[in-house]
Structures are given as C-alpha cells and as structure tokens.
Amino acid sequence: YLHDALQEDANIKCTSLSVNNQYEARARLVRIDDKSRGFPTTRAELFSYDVVICSDIARASFTAEQLAWTVELVGKRGGGFAMIGGNTSFGSGGWDQTVWDGLIPVDMSGQGLARSQNYWGPLRVVIPPQAQGHPIWRMVDDPERNRKILAAMPILGGTNLTDRLKPAATALGLSARPLAGSRGVTVF
Image 1 (tube, rainbow, N blue to C red):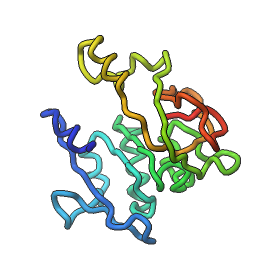
Image 2 (image 1 turned 30 degrees about the vertical axis):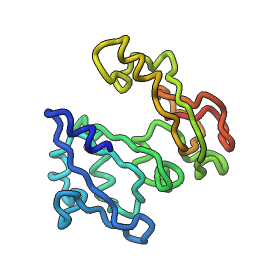
Image 3 (image 1 turned 180 degrees about the vertical axis):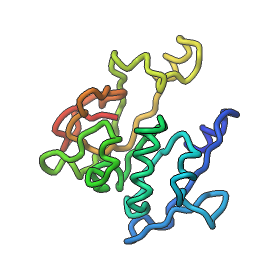
Image 4 (image 1 turned 60 degrees about the horizontal axis):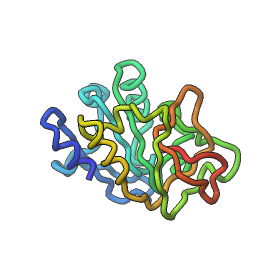
C-alpha cells in the first residue's frame, strides 16, 4: 500500500523490497521489480536514495555496513529514515541493539518488558495539538477537507509498545486511550 501511495506522486521514484522469510537467521531482501537485487550493497548505491523506510523487516536482513551507511545517509547527507511497526520492528526486533537506535525517536531500550512487546487490538489514533500542523498530517491542501480525512482515519489493529519519546522528539500521533502493557503514552 505504501509503495502504491508513493507512486501516485510523479515526483517520487520508489524502489520497494520484500523479505523472503524474515524469521530466518539470514533473511534476504529482494527488489519487487528485480529479484536478483536487494538492499544497496555499496555505500554509493545507497547514497543515490533520499529516504529509507523499514517496515517490519528483521535486522538480520541487513549487514552491519548497510546499517552504518543508513546512519551516514541521514546524519551526514540529510537523508530521511522511518521505521514502521511490526513483529520485527523497534524493540521487538532488537533494533535498540543497532546503530539505527539513534535514528528512531522512541526509547526502545527501556527498563523491562515494554521494550519487546506489541499491543494487538483496536487502537484509535489522536493527533496531539503540537503535531496538527506537521506535514505528515497534510493529506490534501484544503484545510477543511484535510480535517475530514483525518477525522475518518481507520482504527488500527495494533502497535509496538515503547517506553517513551527520546529528548527533543515530538509525538505525531498518540493512542486515544492507555493500552494494556504500555508503561506510558503510546507513540506513533
């Protein structure tokens, strides 16, 4: 769905990958349009991209060099990075034990089980006042139409539990109610 949404914008070129079996000891990422290729295998190739989005991919799918290059893409080259939740995302996937921990705005290394648990069940997202003007929530240019679209957001089926936002991070979406197993406010 994300690939299709990004491809709707003629100014965006999206290279999508899938994982052959994320629970294997050495899962392999393959490009949707060219199964012989995967995640960039050289620093120069990765630097030809502007953004890396990791959606529920086991850390075993990447080499230590690929993780370090991604940090460099963001920190030194101004690229973007996003991690989307899932069974192998955030603390559940052990990402707090990698250099990508510095790219993620939530504390996954917390004290206790919340680091590695997920919440499965209905979840309504509310947008906190300080995030309402953030570009991620602008679906269309017309403010009134945009408010209606956001008000109609579907209920989510779950989330990764995290301990807290890191200093200087801004919550873009919160759970409308406390979630079982969460030690604080759930952040999206």
